[in-house]
Length: 99
Image (tube, rainbow, N blue to C red):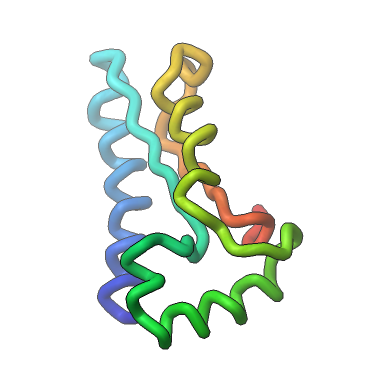
């Protein structure tokens, strides 16, 4: 898990740096931070499926997260509705982590 968790932190830090460096050119940089998502790749790993069951208990919305749960947030970030948003991390995890 070390490399997985470290890479997530790196993406968040890179997003903030890109927003600072590219904002003057009108370029936005945001990232989407999904919770544990029951994707096809996860389903192939029995130990990950078990870990996912434990994750459900930490969520306000007590169910598995699927790739489709990320679509609306991604569409928002790609749309003109988010034109004045940059350097942000949008967490989509069913209420597991709250800021």
